[in-house]
Image (cartoon, rainbow over all chains, first blue to last red; front, side):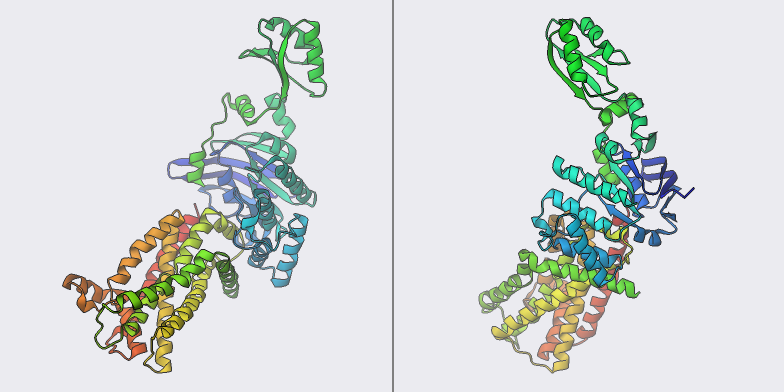
Length: 322
Length: 254
């Protein structure tokens, strides 16, 4: 079998007394997407910085595209692309000039750099804006340009550190589609995210990381099995019987509905038709309903299921660490 | 090696492209020093005694030295910006020469400094400045100024890598360099200062450099100032390049 495109073993990194990574093992097959899911300060960015040669690990080893991130760092840099948490583009240059500069710094040569800059502007629907300084771009356009810069050298492995944080839903969807296109063309992607739905949509395998340790690893379905997938939430009218509601809803789920903080929760296997069936069942039982909806699991749900507590954001620590 | 030079050139060109698109920077290079020339010549010129020279002849080497030392300010602001916006990370993830970021910055400063020399010299000639020297001497004066400006680009590179925001870089640079330029022979003869300040001014690298430019351009007695000025410029460049490179490695690999 081929060597994985991304492979780490026992990766450790500390900043002073703060242990950012405490022995991280990761693997991503060629042409797949590995999602690194975790809250702020979990160590996601540190892992990306090590894999992109920006940081050297204190212990452990990491190989990307068959090259060691420390020993072969110089050679590796021609084969990877990085798009970071903020759009790392020069605001005073035009979109074209930004991509052209990155191409020149990948040593693609003048003509090839220009050709790729124009190709990427076209692919990212920035051709019209390509001659304007980036400071006139919207947030979504900047992220697209940033992703374009990461793709200039057609890298074998692409690292995306929270690529959609701060984007509006439409730009987010657009960026997802672009990433999926790259994957179809054979690029291996490591993606960090705080959003379960993003990892769910894009990643073939997901590694959940917390306090510098991988606490769960598997496909999206594996993870959902452990988290419990989607849940139906029912708020009852005042005076309605919770026991009657639980009895009425029980046939909808393989697991028993339960009451938590005044809300009835029903674990669901399938979402389709659940709301209509629940309303009918409750109506037949004569239980009044105030509100009803399907709730998708969030990062917090994953953490509660895996660790018994909510995800702790450590924005400050990550800031220092990054 | 050739790749490192090519990378440096790519980044220097990038830095220069920004300048006409940031009008505030353009103003800082051209209009501000011109304003200084006009204020000093017409406001203080009548009040300051400069035995042996017209004030405008005395002033121009001083004001040009001051403004060229601030030319590296673009490097400080640019580095703060690149660090904060994540561009340094992008550069470090590319297969380019690590040295090119700082080398490209300081190289582009030489170009902008040359531009500001042309503007200031032209304005100086218009308000009555006269060279009193041979062409090689005048050229040596310009060369010294470019070298002195380059040395201060490294000072500002260090400032930019130490400061966390453009505002901090601004005040650090201003507080460190502005008093030094005034406590020198740039604007008034040092003999007119209190003796303690005169003693300081005499060893101030700005005095040494301004005196050297006056010697080269006006035929003033040079003493050792010309060699001293070149030595200062090279010394400042060497010390601050070392500091800046060390600092760059630290801040960029966190």
